Length: 193
Ligand SMILES: [Zn+2]
Image (cartoon, rainbow, N blue to C red; front, side, top):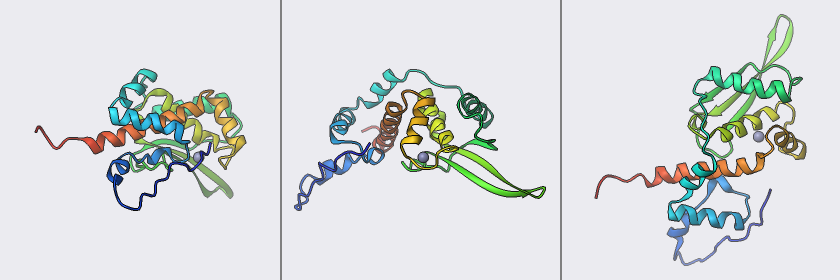
């Protein structure tokens, strides 16, 4: 899903740069301009949050690592039964809002009783504790798919879609959600005027 790099501005005079800098969309790199224009508009109008809330009214109640593990295990049991055990699935509040690291799958090899065992762990950014249910599922599905497919290639996304048919839409909307959260933080007012 790579968009054309159109829309890069080179004014060279510094005019109007501030307005555009505010609307940088770091979580949406690679998406085509025609998808990003309405996002910029909704951000500017302050309607992005409502839009997402309407689209994703369903919250989840997965607040603990135990519940998160059970939730991931249910997906795995259903779609990736043979992918080998998962040692851990946890929320991690050190995974910050970096668009590259919303979740991670790591494999730690240890020698155990003469055998080399890989302990595989999924970490999910703690931001997803408060995110809509579908968005938590999306990030879980993404990391689970890496149990089988290492690269972000066709096979990988086919597996993601198999587990979550709306995968691409939800991934895009999750990026909108993160964009909205970042905008909220930026806009948090210094106090009553
Ligand atoms: Zn990935």
